[in-house]
Length: 355
Image: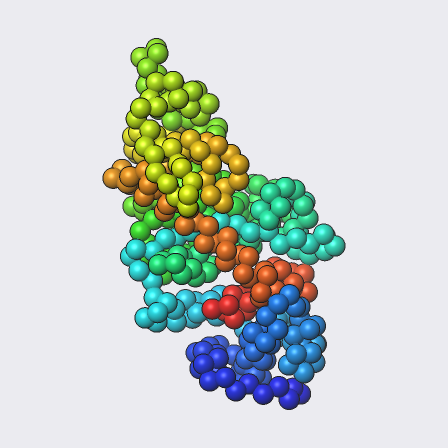
């Protein structure tokens, strides 16, 4: 039995909001878990947490792995709690951000979901778990919303054709619907180029959502070539060449964090979409986006200025800061369980403590 004394009233009050989701014994471990994470705060795991609160490791492991409580109900109540708080409430001016994160697991190949796949942390292939996530950003604050546990097609009997398989793009759409079902207001849905597939863009538009996203260089968009005077769906390289040669006088220039950004914009349509978009060709590097000197950002809000769309898109970085905090300070990646449901319970508890 633990002799750890939990006496911080604000933490006790927060934990009490979730009391009805646990048995009496479960709730005592739940609260100890929260205190242990806050107390340790830097790079720990379940073993060190158990020592911190002087509780048997097996008891803590059992709480995360096998005791009967529902992580989805826990997350639902967490979000409802945030919605009703004045200082953390959601606003029509907020952004819904979709992205994924990787958890490196080089020595845990038998853990469910671990595969040799693209790892967002390394921007390269590695053995890792992947979570597709939604987050909310408003007035400089960011809030984790939900997570989807991704497994590669190789883990399914029928591969991509298996009815249980979900791609990352499927999860992105599910997370958008999840936010809508929770009646979370947002000004824009924001995601990076990987999620800017035609399928996801059409999905957002059909739900009457405004979006801002970077797109990959292999997307084609309708443009009238001033040399041939013909309009057709053009690739990025050709468009950039034409802008530099014929339309540089129409490029808008503004500064952001001492960086000069050159942006050419026009209204158009992407191939295989059925609605107009405004396309912003950024002919300079973007902060937080590496050394690439061309970025194309699109939105279905045709009224946005170049400066507004670029600065709003850069707010997407809030979810990257969130992932970094969860890993660096709340040991999001230090789980010692192997199965999907148990990992999701662990991740949900860590996000709740972060909250």
